Length: 165
Image (cartoon, rainbow, N blue to C red; front, top):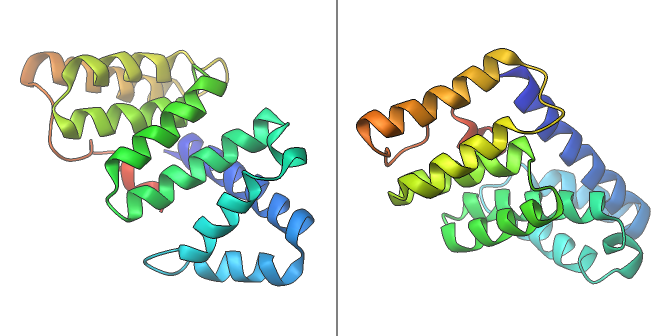
C-alpha cells in the first residue's frame, strides 16, 4: 500500500537527516551503505549513539523515528523481543500511529496473541493521518480474519512486516 510505504520512507528520510546533521557526511554514507546489508550493525550503532544525544532525543519526532528504525533492525535479526520493545516505545510517543501499531499487531499475531493483535490493528486504524480508506479496510479485514480463524504465524498478505526492510 502506497501510504504505508510513503510513511516508512518519511521516517527513513528523517533519520538520514539526523545522521547527516549530527555525525557528518562519512557517517551518513556508512549509514546508507549499511542499509543494503543483511545485518545492519553500523545503522544500529548510529541509532544507539543518536539515543545518547540530548538535542536529538528532546524532539519526539526524532525519537519516534529512531525507535521505528531500531525495530526494523531488530526485525531483520529476528529479535522479536527487541522489535516489540522498540515498537512499544514508539507507540508511547504516538499512541495511534499506523506504522508502529500495525507492525506491533503483526508481531503479536505471529506470537499467537489474538487479543493484542486485534487491539493494535484497531489502534492503527485510529491514526488521524490515515488517508487511505483501502488500507483502513485491509487492516480491519485482518481483525475479522483473526476473529474467525485465529492468528496466523506469518505476516498478513500486505507484507507490511517486511516492507520496512
